[in-house]
Image (tube, one colour):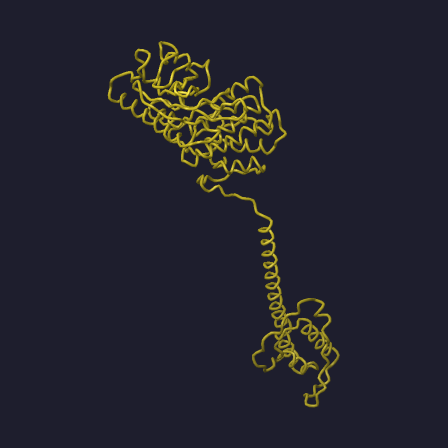
Length: 454
């Protein structure tokens, strides 16, 4: 099914007997009337005479290179081998798509019952979704509210995800291809994968896409199409439902995008998560859109706004938010790093002090003491309080101590100043430097003892 009647395609289909007449019997199915037509087929409302229930019947009919003979048989326009091969190739793709769709059983995806070949062409028999297309509802009401749009998107995503998991794409999502049942539930119909392949091979690609809903990659037969392609179209459907008109055509948006974001243009702005997700999926460049349905569903459900990123395979959505426990672990790591940095700075400071003592107070007139290699350094005090509260060592009163000459006032003051500095630093190297500067100082014995403590 395509956008329903009053289109140019419908006029072309009905003129010159290009459609099957009402009452025509196709095995157990009876044609009731035409529902719609597109560049590559006609869709009829039919009746299953065995089960007495309505069905939708889609006929392969590429209008550009086929004709109908005696209101029944479909054949290529010419007998040229190239035209015959083209026609047969297209019909095989049409049947292959029917087989693929026949595997899906989901409430929001049209169900394919069977296919059959007759009249030189092929037919797909589908369940008939009794309702009206979303396009008619939008025309009648102008716009829909955010609650209604969200209620349509989520079930459609569930069905479309099943299609994507099988490796297929819809490629023609638009309001006319979404049928609203009597209970309001949406059904996605008229898959365009086969039409896209046929059009890329035999005709202009523009004949198999809908401007405003087709992203830029669909305008090239070599475009990078994937789940993001269908998501763009579905976001465009949500946009037109909320704004009243579709986004500008993709070919215009790539170079200069003046389409007003849904976050500003929507008549109902009560659901910012929905509007933000729509704007994300409508990014002109495919690499900037959500790459899979799970990613976009998360944005719709949680209001997660994604930023553009480099393209990656759809199978790796990634980009999850950090959980609280991960953040706690990170804070712990930062604490460890800070401790390491502080410890390193302390070690550098100690070495710098030692070098300062050596350079500042070692002169040619002050002979260095003959001292063995210094013992291991004492542990650095863990706090300023510990340094300040350490008991000041008293000068040695041992009888065995070597008597020291009585220094003059200036020498004694300098001796005491250097010892106090060494005492505050509290490392063996500092006491060794003190001994070199004051080999006969009055704190010599105590400095020797402290410099040799482990």
